[in-house]
Image 1 (tube, rainbow, N blue to C red):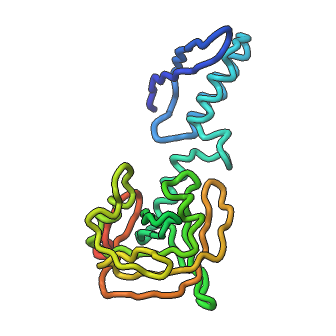
Image 2: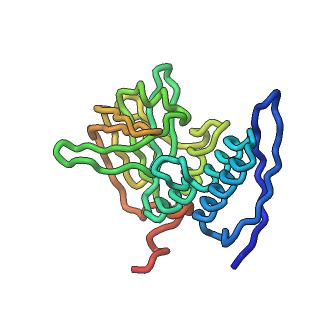
Length: 232
């Protein structure tokens, strides 16, 4: 059994901002989000008994740590770890903005939706860079990265730089940049945008495509790899 002493800062407003240092003995906490739930419930009960006016602030912090009060009651960090167990390919989605700028970003949400008609989809967070550009674009292109294009994946997910710097491209339909050296690209006309919670689902009809020999870049549990890394 592991006993870990934890400390949480809680902020509340009562005649001004005050900081409360909460210290609690926590039991069997190691690697178990459920124990944060026990601690949160216990702290809430303690403060309620004492009639403290900081109950709500302290309790909300511990609930956030436990995952209670999150959508579905999940611990979001742990939920993302679970989703990460599903291996995906990696692609760079590109488009031409209304003002002529090139927009591009790395995604692993690309998927085939339909063969007849040929539809594909991908998802983008509402707060993502270039969200407005992709929302307004009539076309987008999906560039599927090969096993040795890890650097491209990182470059198109970085912020504060020109993502197309040093990248060889040709222009596709609608002005979409097509990355040279990828193992496939799909030029699509945007046909639908669906609400997906904190993301938007972009559906496109494939107007042009091309594929090339080569192994794909794979993303799994926050790491990059190639198929040869996996047991057959």
